[in-house]
Image 1 (cartoon, rainbow, N blue to C red):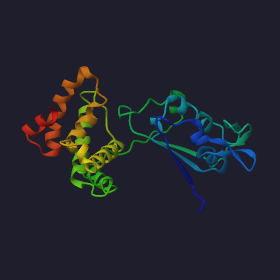
Image 2 (cartoon, rainbow, N blue to C red):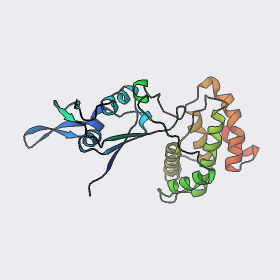
Image 3 (tube, rainbow, N blue to C red):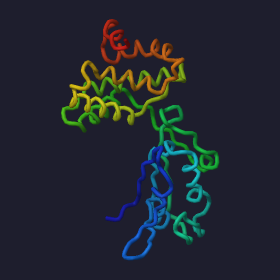
Image 4 (cartoon, one colour):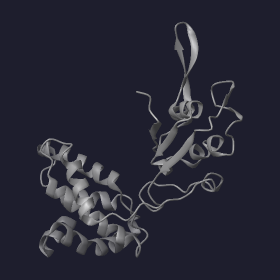
Length: 241
């Protein structure tokens, strides 16, 4: 089956060879293996840059040769040592979370001006809960209710981001990371005695907060934790201590 699109997930460690391609030694010869972007350019496929703004700005700038008005022209691809023709059927789509979400970087102006921005509709709490339950089920014995409550917490926390911008926005990627940590704790309980899922949520929330702002953030998230996880004042205070 010939695909109509190729997807590449970007992250903070992404470099050019991951999506343009790399040189390898095969059959006593040095050959260039096309990355997904180079293959898409040649074959006229849709290239989907998933989580594009997790990549460093220098990496994002490198895609300019793919999205500048170069269709039908010969373009030099890093590492190939020759030029290729960009197919008129090629399209570039970037999927990403908003700036302010943990780990996201500003899109360089030279790239952003070529984008048509389509904002995804705001997710309903029930939709987030269903997705979180599915994330929990990736791991054997995953707790759907805990995952759903973390989803509720994320929605409320992102609302607080509008008031206190030192609190980074969360995405479903953060839910997945937390679910994985909780799963590992449950399977190694001897080394994590007394550590509950709520501790993990608190640790993760505060991990990117400047020490001087922790008291302000704790005051802000205290009622969020109570509401999302149905905790009383004593339970919340015990976790924070």
